[in-house]
Image: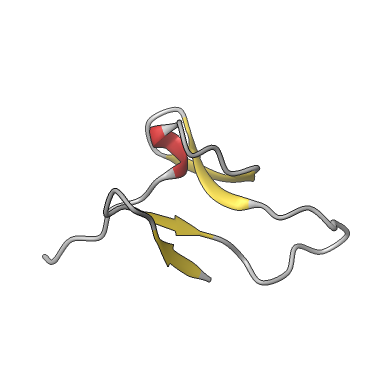
Length: 53
C-alpha cells in the first residue's frame, strides 16, 4: 500500500506482515537499507520520494 502524505512524500506499507498484527511501514535504516518498522511522521527515514529516471 502506498499513501501520499501531506508534505508530498509517500508512506509504503505491506498489506500483511507474517506473524505480526502491527501496522508496519518501509523505513530506511541508516541512509539506504530498508526495513519494516512503525511509521514515524516526524522522521525522514519513514518517508519516501519517487522520481523519474
